[in-house]
Length: 233
View 1 (cartoon, rainbow, N blue to C red):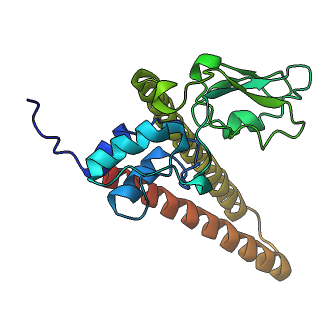
View 2: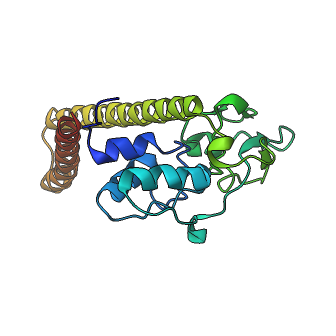
């Protein structure tokens, strides 16, 4: 007999989700949905990719009855993957930005391609495409939910999603740091300028105030990001 799972309920619920990160549940990713269920803010039938088996898994853990998928969250269907029409693709990168698991590769103004093995079928790349060149193609006809998706695939998708989230956060922090350094350098250059007229001094003071305010906002953002990291540890 295996020992009882003593982890937080949200962690246990997250393990039971298919990790498609599709947002159909009404939350921005699988983890927030798991947290909402754990806190009683969401029902356990809001994940169409998990299908009826997914609802049953969540119900067992929560001690609740098995109920149908809420139609407001979508329908249970065979698992699809995205397919890009390479003749129509203009290389705008919007689909790459929308993909929650980095399953689309390409570069600006270059053709994009979906790595089929990594695609979770979330549909999030379809709407942003300005030339409507992305189609969702069924790859598990007759199989839905966990019959069409393995635990190994779910674990891999979660890992890619978490890595992408960390990467985007790091890129944002690096960009904020660059902007702060640029603002500080500009402020120093203004301070090193030769004597100015009263009108020029007034304008310079206004610009300094704007730059200093921007630097302070960047500092507060950095502090908040550090506090958030500590809170998650």
